[in-house]
Image (cartoon, rainbow over all chains, first blue to last red; front, side, top):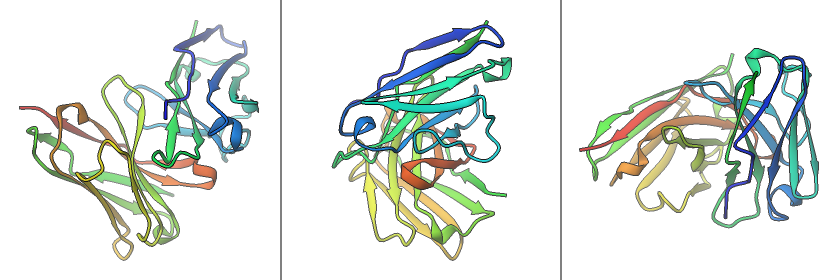
Amino acid sequence: QSALTQPASVSGSPGQSITISCTGTSSDVGGYNYVSWYQQHPGKAPKLMIYDVSNRPSGVSNRFSGSKSGNTASLTISGLQAEDEADYYCSSYTSSNTLLYVFGTGTKVTVL
Amino acid sequence: QVQLVESGGGLVKPGGSLRLSCAASGFTFSDYFMIWIRQAPGKGLEWVSYISSSGGTIYYADSVKGRFTISRDNAKNSLYLQMNSLRAEETAVYYCVRESSGRSLDYWGQGTLVTVSS
């Protein structure tokens, strides 16, 4: 079972929108509506930003949105702000017999 | 508010053992599945182990099976990870994490650093 594929880096200017992709297979991303996204600032624990593909936990800005098409999920950050600069990881439910949680490779978001 | 506080990390020699603890508060611990996740320096997230709310169902990543043991004490609101035969490549920050719906992980501890080195 391989990790989900994310771009290594994505950048944007303040106020712009960016999208991070997360590509898996029909055994994980494509097979279930259980994709989640995490934000991690340096030296800090990850924070849940999106769950069940497109739901935001209480307290998460509505500038963050999630979607899915086929085997690829996406996280969009609109109105990019300096505080959004962080690493982002996707994760998905998987039907694997040996791996309960599969994570993405991680994407570094840089605010120019 | 929900809090997860890990402890027990430190420096250990290859082949050595360490026991991590996680103290939970702010929620009904016995209602939730709990997970250990680790992150090697500069690397991504890796699932290590899972335990159901009652402790009756347990899973391990293949990489730690037979060497790590997860457990919980619902009376003490605590989660544990006994790590034996540690390897250098297992140097990482270990996070105690609560599972919510659809395998989403809604609360994370601050992490405890385990360094395996001679």
